[in-house]
Image (cartoon, rainbow, N blue to C red):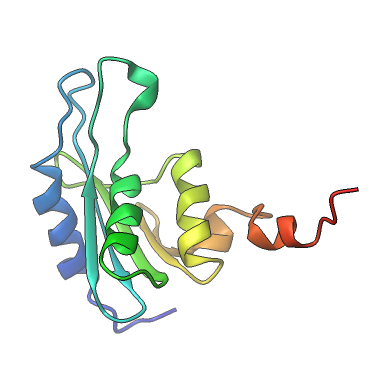
Length: 135
């Protein structure tokens, strides 16, 4: 893993965007920040909805920002709550991050930096679909 990566700077970006979260129902703002393979930083915050099941997680915003600003692959990601504490992405978001960063994506967790293949072991991804011939 990249020992020289500036996690405090990326975490600061996640904290800053968490302040823009729209969380009137849960009152649990979340911010996420990630780097892309070309060095861009992309951010997202949770956006809740009165129909609770259609909430947009902060990680969804990160992936949308990644594609809206040129695509590529995520290399590092961190999520924080409204108090600035590092939190773990939910299961749905782990899948989303896997699709856009793969096994090598580094995730800051409360227990330290872990690779995505540790955070989502035995993941199902695009390669599983490619290997299926449909019969």
